[in-house]
Image (cartoon, rainbow, N blue to C red; front, side, top):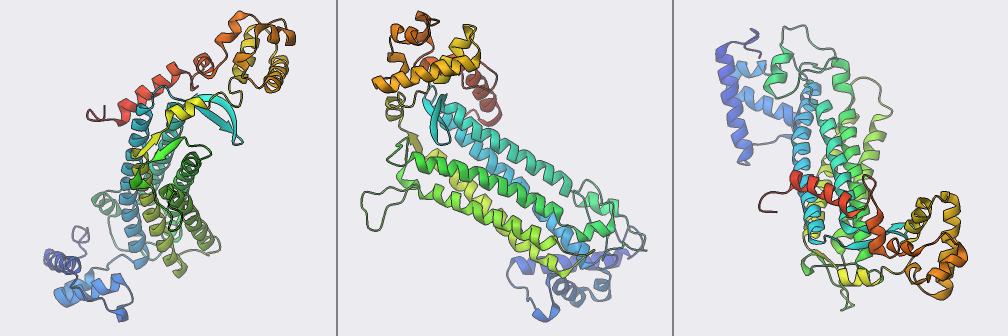
Length: 419
C-alpha cells in the first residue's frame, strides 16, 4: 500500500519483503534473537529489518503506530480464534445429537427446583443444550462481524497526514473495511470484552451441563455411566468412579468469568485514548480462549463416552407424580378452569401419597370421589408414557415435536457416516 501510494519505491518494497520473510523464517526456526533492550516484538522486528534492508527498513513504520498495529494484530488473532471456536461448538453439538439418537424414546424426569416436575424425552433435554450452543455460536458470529474492521492507519490516535489507503490495507487483510474513527480505533477494547463475554456464556452453559452429568453419575441418580476413559478413581477408595472431566468443566467456567471481570475492570476507568494499561488485555483474552477451547473438547469427549442407564431410569419414573400436570390438562379439556383443575389434581396427588400409589393406580371411584368429572378416558393421560404422548405444542416434549427437531438437527449437523 505504501508503495502504491508513492510513499516508498519498488526497490524499498522488495528489500522490506525480503527482510521480513527472512525474519519470519528465523522466528519459526527458533533462531531469532529477541532483545529486551528493544522493548517489544514490534521494535525487535523493525530493528532486525533495518539491519537486513538498510534505509528501506526505516520506512516500514510509515503512517502507523504500535497502537494501531497491535490492535490490528489482536483483531486478526481473534478472528481466527472465533473460527476455531465455532468448529468446536459444532463438534459438541454433533456429539449431543448422536447421543440423543442412541436414546430415542427414552423418557427421563424433568426437574424444576431440583424436584421432579414432568416427564420429558431425553432427546428433548439434550437438544436444549444443542440450542444453547447454537445461540453461543450466533454470539460469536456477531462478535466476529463487529471485530472485523481494520484499525491500521489510525496511527497513535489521530490518523495521519500522509496519503495512505486504509481501504486497501483492510481489504488485503480480509477485513470488511477500515474502522471509522481513529480515536475509537486505538482506545477501546469492547470487541475483546464482547468476545470474552460470549466465551463466559459458553463456559456457563457447559458448567450447567457438567453439573447435571455429575449429579446423574452419582449413586443417588445413577442415570449415566461414564466410560473408564472419561472417569477417574480415588487414591484411597477403590470403589470410586468419578466423572472428573465434567467437574473440571464446571470449575473452569469460573476462570473464564474471572477473565471477563478482569477486562471490564481494566477498561472502566481509562481516559482516552491509548493507555499502557491496555497491554493487560492479552492474558485474560488468551487464557479465556485456551480454557473454553479445552472444555469444549473435554465435554465432546465425555458425550461420546457416556451411556444412559435406560432400565434404571425407566424403573424409577413412577416416583414424583410426573403426570400430575397432564391430569390437570385432561380436566381443562373437560372445560374445567385451570385453577380449579390444579386444586382437584392436588387432592388426587394427596390421595396417591396416602395410598402410596401412582395417579394411574387410583381407581375411577377414587377419582370420582374427588370430582365426578372424571371418566374412563382419564387413564389415557396417566402414566409417564401417556403423559409424554399428550404434549403437542410447538417446542414441547411430545414425540412428534421432538422428532421434528431431531430431523432438523440431524440434517444440519450429521454427515452420511454419522447417519
